[in-house]
View (cartoon, rainbow, N blue to C red):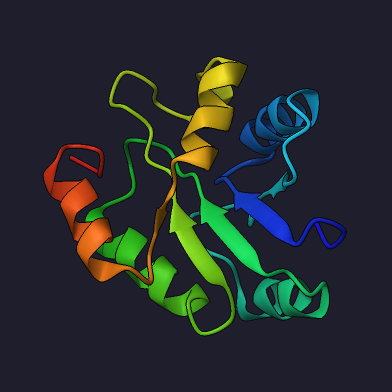
Length: 130
């Protein structure tokens, strides 16, 4: 991730392995990782800063993470990174169960959390959590 400066965060190791393989196979300039839970610890964030990451894309499970939890996670990361959110359609519970081409497309279409208008519009249009 430090080489490309873009990390896609998933909730678990299995999801991260699947997402990382999809990104590598598509030659997409990002790597995947996980905090082994729904949020990164302060120590994990410090390591991401040390790695000189520029962008962090959250690709969390489509169920089990509330809007409030997701927003709190975004706000925790925003002071340090360009944070984007990739939302999975409801039929895909988590990234590890998703087809590789869709994973790459969701990362490409991730909505910038710094653009509040676009972020809220994406949620209202049905792309966000339900």
